[in-house]
Image 1: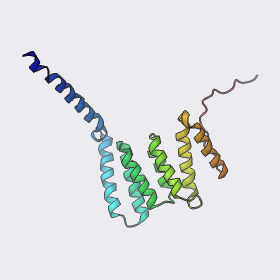
Image 2: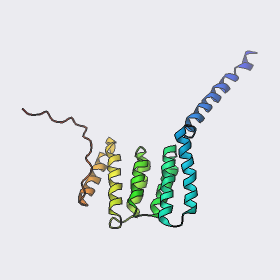
Image 3: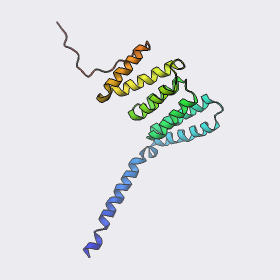
Image 4: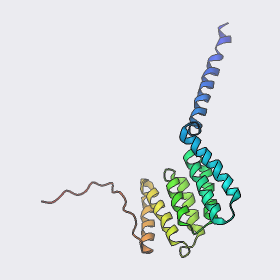
Length: 178
């Protein structure tokens, strides 16, 4: 008789684990900020469909991307940012919003910024390119493995006549000489 009751325990454990996973996975939608972001996403999608020109469409796509980034839907955020950059490739605001929205997700930030740099000529959108380069430098300088990439992009900025943002030094300052 004991063998007949034992199968309930693994089933119960797996059901509790699944419920905990679902609560964790959908937690942004459950929170107040998550509901607000979901409402902003829905409204932005409606504005995307109703947009009359590329600038309005790009703005609505950026709003949708920002909402997706806050909800943790990084893949969708990347897609919306890339669509916004295609709709208005010379917009500095879109590059800036993408850099801020994806700052905590380095692989996603890299994907958007490198595609932006590849698709836009520097002479057409110099400020947007500088924003993308600075975002990549900030991302690369946080990861020791990519410090060489950060330094290379700093050299590109210097070649363009721009001052790179100061990177935080990991070394302590030298002792003061008295």
